[in-house]
Image 1 (cartoon, helix red, strand yellow):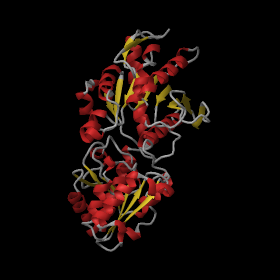
Image 2 (cartoon, one colour; image 1 turned 45 degrees about the vertical axis):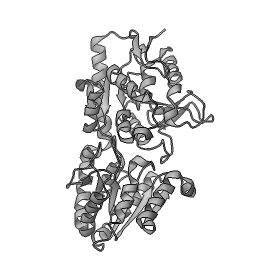
Image 3 (cartoon, one colour; image 1 turned 90 degrees about the horizontal axis):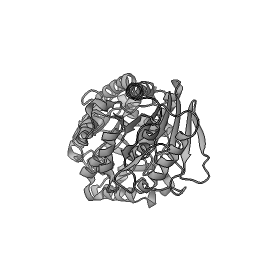
Image 4 (spheres, rainbow, N blue to C red; image 1 turned 90 degrees about the vertical axis):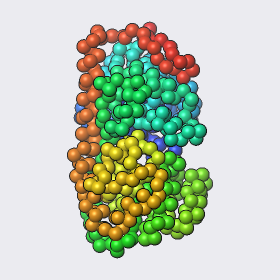
Amino acid sequence: MKIAMISEHASPLAALGGVDAGGQNVHVASLATRLGAQGHRVEVFTRRDDASLPERVPLARGVDVVHVDAGPPVPVPKDDLLPHMDAFGADLLRRWIEPGPRPDVVHAHFWMSGIAGLLSAPAVGVPLVQTFHALGSVKRRHQGAHDTSPAERVARERLLCRAVDRVVATCADEVAELVALGADPARIDVVPCGVDLGRFLPATDRTDHLHREPGRLRLLSVGRLVERKGVDTVIEALALLPGAELVVAGGPGADALDHDPEVRRLRGVADAAGVAGRVRFVGSVTQDEVRALMHAADAVVCDPWYEPFGIVPLEAAACGRPVVGAAVGGLLDSVVDGRTGLLVPPRDAHALAAALQRLADDPALAERLGSAARVRAEHLYGWSTVAARTAESYERVVAARRGRAPAGPAPARQVATAHAPLRAVSAP
């Protein structure tokens, strides 16, 4: 199958840890790579943010990253990219109406990628699959006036839910949100994010974890340093855990931490809580460094306000480490409370501290939870399994399209653009 993925702001080639570079980059890169390994041909279309980038960069066997000219070739915050989606969609349409093979399916990642997909895929008769990764309706509910998304976001997501051929949700919690936006439940598949089980492995020697002094606890937080990730709640919980230390990985490079606004805010939280000496910021890290940090930790803490899915809990599970996390979004799927980790209400430092105290008092419990987490990750979350399930969604939507319409350009459809509510487009 020939697959076109659209990931307008999250390039699979990007360095992780920045404000707009995180789980979606890993998801797109890993999914595309594993689909290529399974014999599919994949092109990932992403926006050119550097004039020196070549148009096409091989990523893996059967997978190329294609840089699309849409807006200035410089980094642009993702919340400022909507005006450039017309140009992105027009570029895709130009490519696909030219002589030569078209993709069998287009898979848009994030809502703005869906806008570009609606401006291109339907016009050439290609089915469009959408994964949102995060929903503006949820973000607005939790962040209120601090939400920097374009004002049109929720309306565009509502349109996408009705207009695309299929939605691939990443967790069960997302399905209800999609239905509330108007998606047909019969056209939603739930396929989780995945984890590289060959890279994220348990430590070969766990003696130090099993025999650590009760009450001592080495904690790890990994992810983009943005307020909604709830690192401040983790820091506040340390005040109730005198034997705990926290490593915070993510954000800018180590040499730029002192100038990062969120790092400065979090250091202020640590000072106010009296735990500054027990919190260490290490900055952006590679995936191999994440694995090493997880091996050194007794538990990985994920306490976001909301979380569309979250890859870090899977990486922790694959490393055989328990997750203590907020009972929100994807963590409700990826962490089984009391079996592979512990779940607590979000933004509740006392509840978080109580759960962590259980692990501090019982090192063997942490090891049992971590071992069970690894087994579950092997059964459910390997990228080969995730890619195969995603390909099944593609096959269903391609078969449905072929069964109800002849091959060739589709009739004009109403689609969203950046500057007008609706516009009809069709292939020339």
